[in-house]
Image 1 (cartoon, one colour):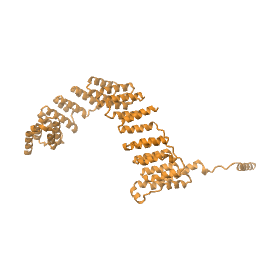
Image 2 (tube, helix red, strand yellow):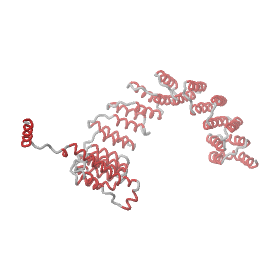
Image 3 (cartoon, rainbow, N blue to C red):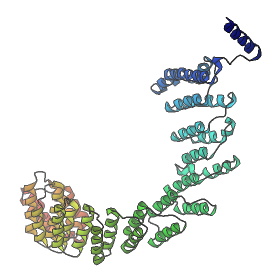
Image 4 (tube, one colour):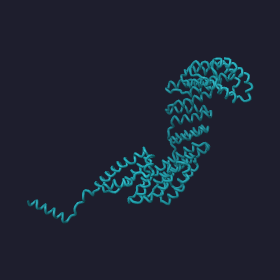
Amino acid sequence: MKRLSSLKGANQFLRRNRKWPLSPYKTKWHQTFCEEQAMRTLKDAVKTTVEPLCHHRNQHLLQNPTGPNLVTTLVDSFGAYNCEPTPNAYRFVIQSLCETLQFHLIPPVLHHIRSVEKFETPEYILSNLIKFYGDFNKIEDAVCLFLDIPKFRCVPTVYSLNALLSVLCRSRDHLKMVPQILLKSQQMNIRIDESTFRIMIGALCRLKKVNYAVDILNRLISDGFSVDGRICSLILSSFCGQRNFSSIEVLGFVEQLRKMGFLPGLVDYTNVMKYLVKGRRGNDALDVLNQMKVDGIKPDTICYTMVLSGIIAEEDYEKAEELFDEMLVLGLVPDVYTYNVYIDGLCKQNNLEAAVEMVACMKELGCRPNDATYITIIKRSCKVGELNRARQFVREIGVKSFGLMLQIYMLLIEGFSGNGKITEASDLVDELLIKSSRFECLTVDEIVCSLCKRRLFSKVPELLEAIVRKGIIPGAMTWEALVHNCGFEINLLESSLTELVNSTQVE
């Protein structure tokens, strides 16, 4: 009993001298719980009022142009749990309206945040809305929202500025607004960084204003910013994507970037070599390839293939052989495109036997030749007059594709016709007719057009006569090609063509 009385006295002492503990309903966990329940109620309300508008948007606007009052819904949802609306709740409402394209309901929500609420609005809510406006070409709304950011008790930073710039830089017309926005950002005490320059440089590169992009890069360096590899790669890629720069200018620009501290990567070197090869500067591309290896970057098969094609285009076949051997020594596996380039070099040297042997080596190594492989050899064989060798090669490879077979036979027919061997050319037409049931007059038209383009007008009547005798009637394209391409030589063909038409009508 004494113990109970002492405890009772202690409790009375605590009650007289200590404050009562806080109510459990006013603690942090209870506030968080109430906010979660309010958010759940708000999501259910939005789901029943906003999402149906996505499917019946036009009908709803006719019946109720103002739409549901989501501000009232939001305030009531949180008021039911005796708590204040949170920024996350407003973010959810705005995002729901954007996803359902209910942009006309967003201004009331923004007005309520600006005029009624007291919290500091997180910047990401406004920057995300700027991006949404930009996605649907609401540029004026995006600009106005950016300029009004301080009214939302929010300190604007480069994050929201970049969001607006990325929207404006999508088109040439809106790009004109960028200088004004940059001046306004200075008044708003926004400090730009490398990301801002990257957006502007990217826009200039897309618009092919590389010189302006280079000027911005130089100003960026002079202002003390560090070299951004992504910006340099973007400018270099755009530089190489235009044809109004000489190879010397491209190489000089690469050297300028290296002096700034930029280290080109595999993609950068590939763009430069591709540009040089297109400009028929194969030896310069080879120098870039060697510099690439000095920098510790291992070239891949694509790099060697491009440079090899450039060297062969300059007819430096000895250096091409060395480059191909170097590629094999480094352990790189040539693909079909590499072999095609190498075979093309052999054909240009009239070394057709070596080219045919290379095709056999390709098959042994598991690299299947494509149509370009065969066409390269046959075209060169026809050009140097090795027609019988070309025909034998066709029999050896056993062409099964109709498209490839048609191209090959076209080359052979042109070759035999050009050398005055009309009988052999007619036999090829007959052979093609037997091999393919889909042979129609369109193929004959293509043959005649090809002969006309090669100025082989004297061979056309003889070939047409041989074809007609086989029961194949040329189409309208044949006669149009003869009329349009023969010109002053049409008189030489008039008599033979007249006889051909008459014989066709008789048959």
